[in-house]
Length: 155
Image 1 (tube, rainbow, N blue to C red):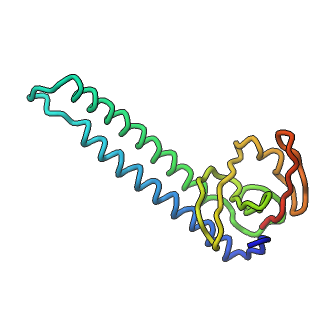
Image 2 (image 1 turned 90 degrees about the vertical axis):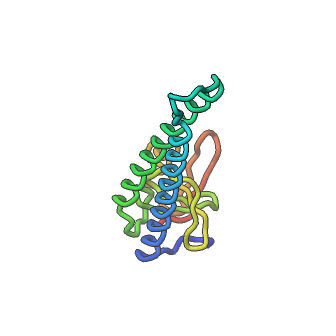
């Protein structure tokens, strides 16, 4: 897709692809957290080496990290589902943009996901580039970190 000419239905498919990717990330983090939680259990009535106990402690720590990751992904999913994905002509929450030949969903942190035959990433309102692009239109140029960029398309 060289230019974004997305109608409302296409944008909703992108939103659903992003939501689906986040749901898969949540499920993977939860599964790993459970696996690590199970690995952290030691039978305290048995004798264990210091290494066994250390590995169990590490597994408990990893489980907690995975649970926190799943919680963060759940928050991102809520954000995605609350974004207005109606067609737009300026960069803002819910916009799908092409920036320097790459595609982004504006308004949420998201790893690369695929939809409409293209790869997309998320740009959070907290991202350092966001203030530089908010409100811009297709064809607008801006400089960020000393590099000139162009908003190719906004949908």
